[in-house]
Image 1 (cartoon, rainbow, N blue to C red):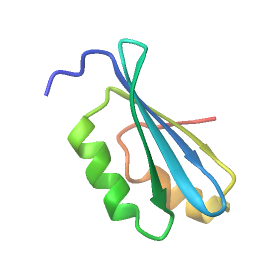
Image 2: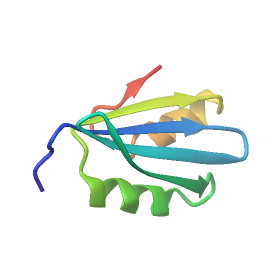
Image 3: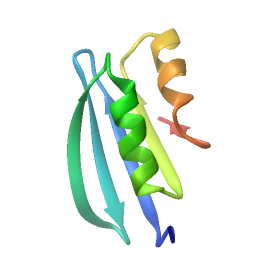
Length: 77
């Protein structure tokens, strides 16, 4: 899949993980995932194939590290 300036933004909160897809700076879609079902988030990520992933997390360091492992070269802010 062509990256076409695809960016995935992840906001990992205490109860759920929100994800937003952008293409060429335009919002394409949003979704919410249960933090205990990271496989669904990973499938969503793989289908989108972004060139950049930006993650914001209030989870513990251990849980954040597990989340970051789902993505290629994520940026943690």
